Image 1 (cartoon, rainbow, N blue to C red):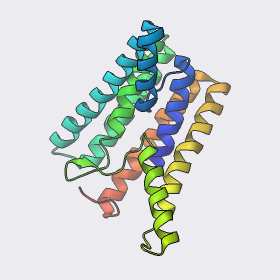
Image 2 (cartoon, rainbow, N blue to C red):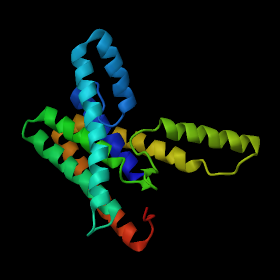
Image 3 (cartoon, rainbow, N blue to C red):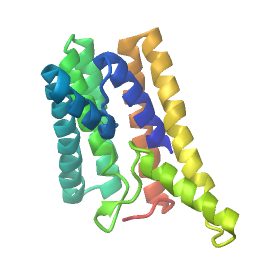
Length: 206
């Protein structure tokens, strides 16, 4: 849930910095790409670039984390996300706003390589459509009396992203540059927490 909140915050900051594009919600960017092709090619090109960077972030973090030998795979994956967010904050503070957006996209793609199970995404931390569909299925099955599987975790995951978005938007309104540094700091804290949980066995090793 911590990474869902981080994704919400970073996406809100990226949305406000870019003037209406996303750094973690690629369904939205795909729609903007489609509209841009019909109406404004500059928007289409930017959306396509952000989508490509997001996918690149996933690829890079899978390769980096699966190649890790000294530290646990999840630890390596979280450190890559933290490194990219720190880089984004540093570049943005130096005036490189567009490169910073690129780093944010890479970071959010990389975040989806943290929770993997048997080579596939176990938890998607930057997109909630699937989570809400699962929530709806679980609630419907409860109402039918055919399944007592828990539905609350899906609701909490969605709420984490929303509350993170609120925090990111509020932070951006206060200080665009500081808000990015806060997100970077949060990613470092989450990397530390994940590392500790891995060592104590409270996080699955897959």
